[in-house]
Image (cartoon, rainbow, N blue to C red; front, side):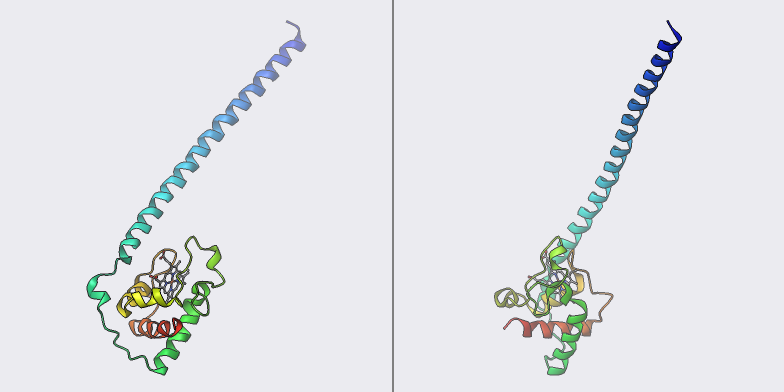
Length: 160
Ligand code: HEC
């Protein structure tokens, strides 16, 4: 075998080794990434599931009476809170057309829809605001109970 052919052979096998090595590496790393994606998918599903259960409003909550009278003062407070916490998803008038609505995986509910809103008691509205449901956040820690009831009073003015 001439020196030249030997060099060529070594070079060739080097290239083959590199290509196979790269293939193995990319396979390993892609399956590792798939593993991570699967794992995070699972946690999302679990979280979404438990929140979905939270949407099944307990009957005693649905019957809960709104402790705050819908005075113009309460409605005004609710409006300010709504505009600061809800409007960017649900829209200024509650139609579900806020600035971030189109980038959400679920369309925000139309809170100006009379039929939808008539089906929900004050207690149910309060519960939904309290617990949230992906992608809607829970307001249990960020808004006081009073504030959540003011919002309920304001929501009633959106669906007319
Ligand atoms: C990040 C966006 C986002 C924010 C912020 C948000 N929501 Fe929602 N909301 C949603 C989405 C999406 C749904 C629909 C969830 C579903 O049914 O799958 C929803 C559902 C609701 C519902 C349930 C309506 C029904 O038909 O059962 C009410 C009530 C509601 N939101 C009120 C509010 C109020 C009040 C606020 C502010 C305190 C608020 N939301 C903040 C996205 C949002």
